[in-house]
Amino acid sequence: MIYDCIIIGAGPAGIVAAIQLKRSGRNVILFEKEKVGGLLRNANLIENYVGVGSGMIGNDLIEVFKKQLEEQNICVVKEEVIDIKKEDVFEIKTNQNVYKSKTVIVATGTIPKKLDLPEIDDLEKNEKAFYEIEDLIEVSDIKKVIVIGGGDAGFDYSLNLKNRGFEPEIVTRGEFSCLPLLLERAEKLGISMHKNQEIKEVKLDDKNVVVITSEAEFEYDAALIAIGRDPCLPFEIENQEGLYIVGDAKGGKYRQVHISTGDALKTAMEVDKYLS
Ligand SMILES: Cc1cc2nc3c(=O)[nH]c(=O)nc-3n(C[C@H](O)[C@H](O)[C@H](O)COP(=O)(O)OP(=O)(O)OC[C@H]3O[C@@H](n4cnc5c(N)ncnc54)[C@H](O)[C@@H]3O)c2cc1C
Image (cartoon, rainbow, N blue to C red; front, top):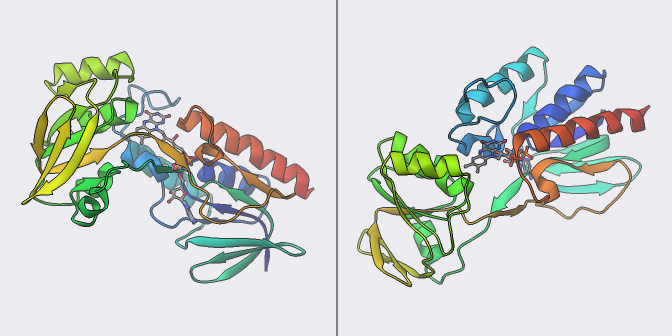
């Protein structure tokens, strides 16, 4: 079977592309290597997406998306795409199968920037350093968390942790660069915050994470790192007709749900025109 379009990544962008192409009568397949919803699974409160009223927890918004996928009979295949080739049509190799398609939409999002310090890999292996809140909250015995990064994501993580009964503390090397309302909320909840502190060393001492900054030394149960993200293009992608990159994977300056879904919608319409 040859699909009209194969979409890689079931984050907001991939979901919107699939819904739009299905509406256009195209046969599509949507691949997801982890869980439906993508990065949105990490979001504490989405307030800037139309339709969420006074705000919605990322995971609750994902449930709405999932329902829509189900209602429109769009199947999400839990396979990881590992290679794309083009002969007459595209051949998409996953960890389980090979599929054929006339077009491909790559909506693979981003990966976190790693903290470039010697012991960080060790901490990750020992489940003491995390880049996604979803992974951290699944581990027991964690209470005190150092959140490294003073942008929107670092603050969103800290508010989320605080609401879940953790004790987060924010450390960043420069000024806080988050939205003022996030800073205000963190202050109101009594979250400790430290700015202008370059992280010099992070190490495991017995069961604790020790963070040494230019100003002080802190000890925590775990570290949650939010120092930015890079586009995730997990396989070699040649620029060729019929292949499109959408959403956060594009590496744009601004990464928000409306931006990635708007981009995906427009691209899906272009794909439909191309197929016609
Ligand atoms: C803490 C936090 C808070 C946020 N708060 C907000 C907010 O309030 N408002 C807002 O608008 N945005 C917010 N965002 C940003 C928003 O989550 C992203 O902009 C949005 O999720 C991007 O959608 P996307 O579909 O482009 O990528 P992603 O959501 O990253 O989805 C990409 C998907 O592709 C999958 N994938 C990757 N590689 C493969 C492969 N090889 N095979 C199969 N599947 C693959 C991934 O598993 C993932 O599910 C927040 C982000 C974070 C981290």
